[in-house]
Length: 263
Length: 263
DNA sequence: AACAAACGAGAGCAGTGCTCTTGACACTGC
DNA sequence: GCAGTGTCAAGAGCACTGCTCTCGTTTGTT
Image 1 (cartoon, rainbow over the protein chains, first blue to last red):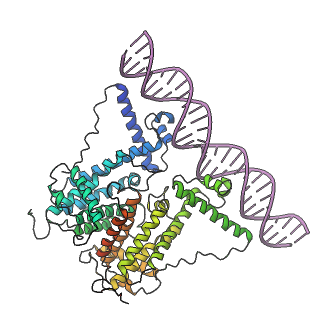
Image 2: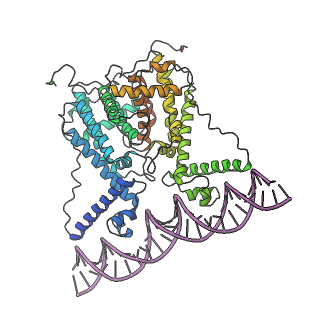
Image 3: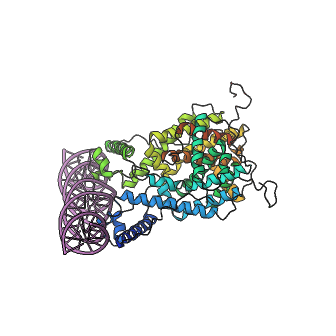
């Protein structure tokens, strides 16, 4: 179902031995960096330390990554890919028409990815590291989870789901921006983008809200802002996401149907 | 109206000249650190650099802050106090009964504080700096904005506002936790906490969602996650907050009143 | 075989957090 | 008034960082 076209970065087999070695060493460096990131966090990631881990001297690492920030950028791209893959894998366990369950499963998958690799989560959803420049490399993989959410909402809307914001007025300027967002998202969905048009401006706006809520809730939990407020994050998160999903009108399969479902 | 009891940290005038000098130098260091923080961000905050700025040598600064992290912690506490003060100042411009307008004005105040001091915002709502330990000092000022939001919701609920999640079931475990949260928040409100009891579990849960949504939306904007998605953050944010406020049932004064406000 | 590019190693620079020691100053009790 | 006590700024120093440059060596291409 949802698959952004990210097949092209499986570059053709490196021919020369040097290229092959280079690719391998690059991966080794990234793996070591990821290990140190998981252990100590992004702020404490030292290029010299990862160089020691892979048995090189620090200056040699600069042949592969021109600066420490570039190493971090590479890790960011990988992290985006990882969370996108986790979300996609979860999504594929649920029939495409069951929008609510898809939303619950995907949001839970994002949360559990964050809990399993908190520093990588902080890397992409926390404070931007140095002066922040979002290179073009990061914008494409960053959209993979929102893309899944858009598909869920589109299917739900096409099935007659009604969003709770649908009756509210919306500024024309915002409608224009959301229109551009819709066409961009619909263009990234390969298969049946027939449902994309069914996503109203209100649904799109509320969908972005849901995406914000998902990341906001996980960030609150991961960054400790719910300390002394919520103990059982598991049930709290599930409850919040369920309510957000219901507000999104995703329970289109449930209302008065015992198990079969109409179109 | 809402005022957490944070008057006690106006410690009595330092008597001896040495104490006075110490307090003054401490403030000078914090001011310089805040300046460098605003310029370069938390990651680049160097204790030696702020020492140079105040005309001291680095080791002298350690007489006032035992480590760099302690300096950052002091800045975090100040940042919490600043955003709380901004929110409170905005809240006091609106009559207490107009819950929706209070919500809109307070959320806008938080956003504009974030935009004016982005690095301080990142300091408290971004990735926790090193290994993260939230000292007891930070938990009290951190609650000031949520406290205001709770008061807004309590007044709205007492005036008959109905939250959109009110019909949804909620796990008993979560109800228990929210009960503790309610008594804690109600206890921090000095004046008329009669309305606090009117805040149902559903309203409280949705209130935390609104708080999450507020910070999530600002974080998305500040950290660049809405790049190529939203251009006019101003109208987008206002629209989102308005819808969240309406879902919270805060428009209790508007329905059938032409212009004069009641109470 | 000859040449150029890529590579790893090492030295070195400027900067960092933090510790320790030293001498000067201010406050306190006699 | 004066010694004793604690606080203070300063400097040197340690281990570490990101990053640059140079130096032989290896590798791929012509």
